[in-house]
Image 1: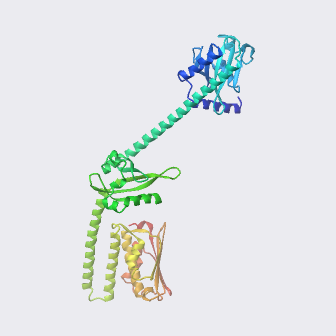
Image 2: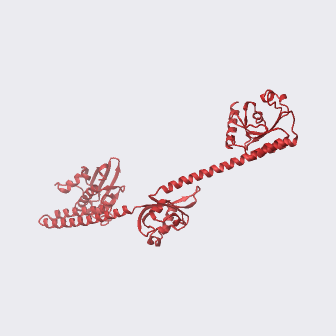
Image 3: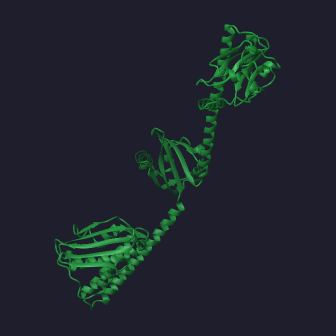
Length: 488
């Protein structure tokens, strides 16, 4: 065969495989076709024959008693090369078959007629054929009947193929559903609730029964709002969650919910929309996880922090009172500066308390320490809102308080039109913060290095990476701190 013929033969064999007919047992529908062909054509032999890869298989036969014969002596292997129908009145006089061992030897076949089985692409798969030991011919009616029977065989094969395809699809769908159910119900730590577009529950996994208490049969068909607290139902929270899921792709669900027993539990989860391929809303899926233990632990931790904050504030008050008494004989300016530093630490402490004493946002820290609300328009603050750790927060609080105090006494904030620009950037190597005073008196280095000067020279977290420019336009100070120290 040439390349074209090889490609066609490969397509033909693939097409035959789609019908899954080779080596199947006898079936009455095909046996009836062979019997009718034999009766109408008056031949002792009739076959429904399929040509595979170097083999022929008889799906049905009359007069042979076998299901397969050698491919090399097959009449049908040559018949499928014809366009539609092949009739050989006398094989001994046809050069295609006169040397065929079935003609020259037993059983001494002489006559062959076959109508080709073709699929919708025109690929030949086999034949419905009749054979005889005597030379003969078929009349027009017999030939037409053989063609009709071949058409009926192809219709049967096509029905089998479609039925098998549908069965495969149903089996695949069933397996997919089984896998989905297995995954769906294996997530027992999570309550997974599936709803239609109106919020009615259509499915409920084993995890939902474990977390919420209701069985699937008890929950299916009910509005999902029954797992919410009465106050959240009154506030329309279930509808708000669905609206958020539709418009934003998710609805955050972190609040108290109800179990079947009436007990409240804290759940952390979200509601997501379920959409068809074209984007149409089909329903929703809610995923919840019981976080009651963690929530109660967090509340206890917060209570402890608040109690600690209360005690620390009392300590600050005591320190201030002691300082007032102890510094009565000292310069009032020095005493005031000391007490202001204690107050700055107190403000940093309050900000850290709001984040569980672990970290705080730099912008919030600046606003609190510098009292930007008290000095509207005097501070220009710009930079990414990064999060800094507790040690960095305390260091920045004292440093910025010192800078602001000096600006009020000697710098830009000591005049009506003066202001301060505070800008910072965060790069791979760390934090760069710049303090620039504008519109104030000329800056000059202090003649005496007091505690405040030493505090500024230490920089952020004691990094001592500080550059001070005492110019005629005012003080400019640059502070750098390694990235690794900012989270401490």
